[in-house]
Length: 153
Figure (cartoon, rainbow, N blue to C red):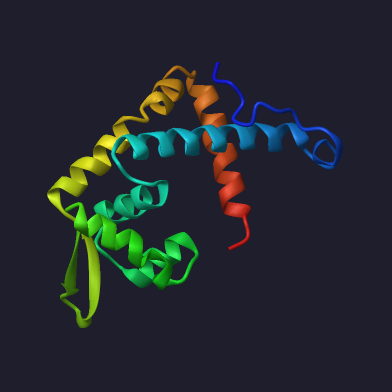
C-alpha cells in the first residue's frame, strides 16, 4: 500500500462536514498520482506543467488558446513552457492549415516518444487496476463517472 500523499489525517474542520473519508481518499489518490507524474517529469528533465503541455501536444496539435483552456489560464502563461519544449526539440510551432494566423503546438517524434515514456513510467496505476476484480473496477469507473458528470462546468 502506498503511503498517504500528505502523511496526515483529516482533523478538525477538515474532518467535519460531509464525506471526509471520500475527500481524504481522493486527496490521497490525486496527490499520489500528481506526485508520481511530477517525479516522472523531473526524470525526463521537465516540470510537471511542461510534461502536461507535451502530453496535450502529443495527443493533437493545439493552439495556445486551446492549451490554455486545458490549463484554465491565459495563453501568455504557457509561452515560456512551450518555448522550453521547443528548445528541447519536443514540440514545434506549425501554421494551422485552416487559419494561417494561428500557430499550432505539435509534438515532434521525440516529443511523442517522451510523452509515451512518461505514461509508461506511471504503469503502477494500470497494475493496480488490473489487480481488481471486474466488479471492483466497475465500481471505480461508476464512481468517477458520477463525480465527473456532476461536477460544475
